Length: 123
Image 1 (tube, rainbow, N blue to C red):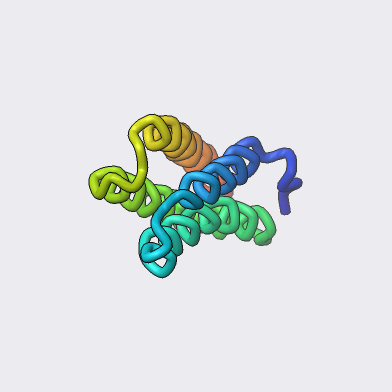
Image 2 (cartoon, rainbow, N blue to C red; image 1 turned 120 degrees about the vertical axis):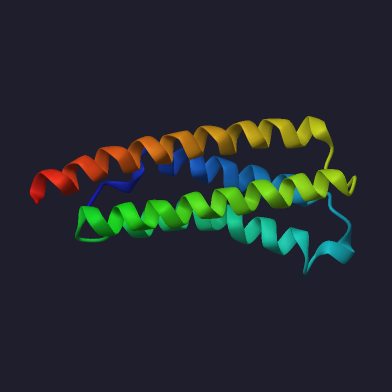
């Protein structure tokens, strides 16, 4: 079990989720059940899966949940790009969000590699 609040990756994922909520608040109301819902769900899934993995009893399980969080980050990235292409999310808002997502993806990959080494050492 890990101290969640000490995990930098989790803290950054929380900030991203809040930023996505703010960015999608300007979307047209007819996207309430479309891109707004999908982007927010994916954004919340990232820190949620990191948290769930951190609360598990094994490094292998934690690594698996990091993979799920990473998948959600790619899903979010795609949804935000679609919103931009539909002209409902300005590039000035999109670009910093994509930078945050890219940083989280790199952090997740590095964290997974570190956990993978721990898993292999135990074998």
